[in-house]
Length: 418
Image 1 (tube, rainbow, N blue to C red):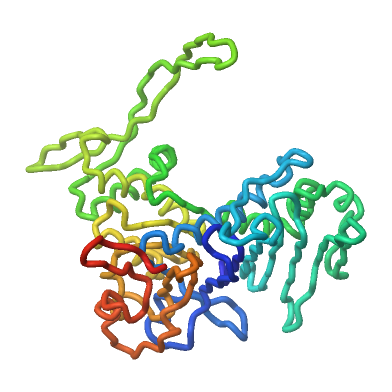
Image 2: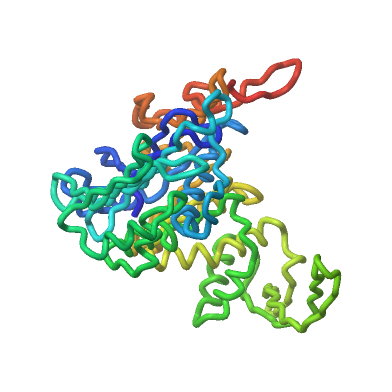
């Protein structure tokens, strides 16, 4: 499970921003809205957290930072030698291309805290580290630092970290993460961390619309068709059953170099939805359903899969095309021990202020982003304002007490802070 994420010098985030899933000592909804960690000093984390902010305030950039870190871990070894990566640093500074970007994630893996991060520019990795808290004092399993004067890397290791370190060092180019290289050489100790950063963290940076391919494949497995239908039924979509029909077709491929055209036979998976009215079943195709129903189906497969496997789901603009009650339904699924027995987590951005209700979410689950006059994004939790129990959170947010809302000019319309 995720405990904390840090980022600096990425897109609109110039200074270091820290996002935390750590639960406060608040006793409200402890059994439902929080998850046990097995750590003495940090006994619980929240199961879901939401981020509010005006348009262009930095919400999406925080999600993109998480995704960029994930992609770096997955693919840094694929960058060609002496080729720049596609990092976008904070550009409103003279040293934008040379100032290092920081990304760090802290996970709790099998009851042990793992703190992994790196600093880098578009040209090279400057530093990389992994701290593991087997006890109160962290063990620096590995540390990698670029010495600019000597133009080489220095490495240090903990006695707990074993394996063919010299070989991994030699194989790690300046554009590549040491973690990625070690995994390619089948390092077993780093595999749990690698999995949490890659397969255990599912990120939808463009909203809940991930396409229906995953949900279509999911429906065809075991009893998942019934599970997806039950979820759609509970969402009051009028759907009573879900099925996937296979349709043959042709796919055209054009070679851009030769302009030659080839046609191949393909099979498409088309979702169909049953509606039962007065004892009769009526079948509708995907495009005959509403945009909200389509989007909820897109999300249904990944959502049920993540809950079953105890993964982390990160979604930008979860409320896009979804009714507020459907958004609440998704959040509730992570906040119920019955639907979330495997301790999955949810992080999402939204403009849906109806979730700002002390009867729906804990105060430590709510975050805000805001831009200042220098176009710098800042991230801060609701707890910074010391809200009282039972405080009218939605009213105060819309009234501007917590920031994170657009400033409205009566003559020219809306503009975000900064």
